[in-house]
Image (cartoon, one colour):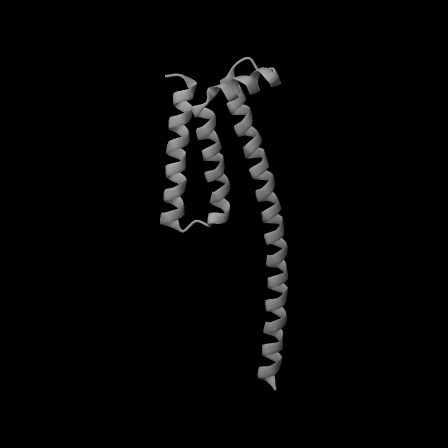
Length: 114
């Protein structure tokens, strides 16, 4: 099986898995949309392998399958960076919420003592 067929089947299976995950687990569509869009891009690239061949030649990569791996690795780095930013933001929000809850709890305790 050549890389075009493998890529097409892999992408199609991945798209089905993502759509089922969104439907079954009520996964947030905001996060799944990136993967769905990427899946459609990969379907187009696997349907027209000339694009990958030209891109590989332009970049200077001898084997087009390595270009696909390079693209996936880049996507994963971008997603990891985005998730680390999201984690940092949520950590700050949790700290602020903990502070607010403790202040409210103290006020309630003071009110109950009166």
